Amino acid sequence: MNSHSTIDPKFEADLQRFLALDRQGRMAALAIVAHDLTVDVRVALLDLPSPEAVERLRVLNEFLHQITGRIHASDEHSARGESELLRDIAQEAEEKGLKGVVVRRLDAAVRHSTRTPKRSAAIRSRVAR
Image (spheres, rainbow, N blue to C red):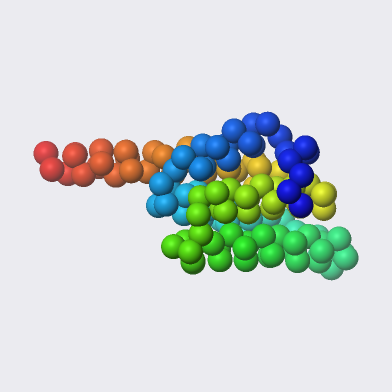
């Protein structure tokens, strides 16, 4: 699954920004992506009982399981491993007709994760005044 030829160049750039995050930032970004997957699950539920919806739910659940597993065991994995997981999920999603899963949210997840410490510091500064 590690052929990168079908992955969007913007997504690759987002993965590089993800790699630059500290552990806390990466976990926040993964949590945002996981949350977005729950939205995809809800959409798939609307199409039940079609066999296609059942397959989409199975695939989305597996992606969600893998991402939340990384969050749970964050001390055991490297940024590179987490990045490769996201790339693999994006590629598998595209192969299974779920283009956009993970890809569309990683940019926002990384942006939010990099702003969170600054926002927290700004709030602490205001409270101290």
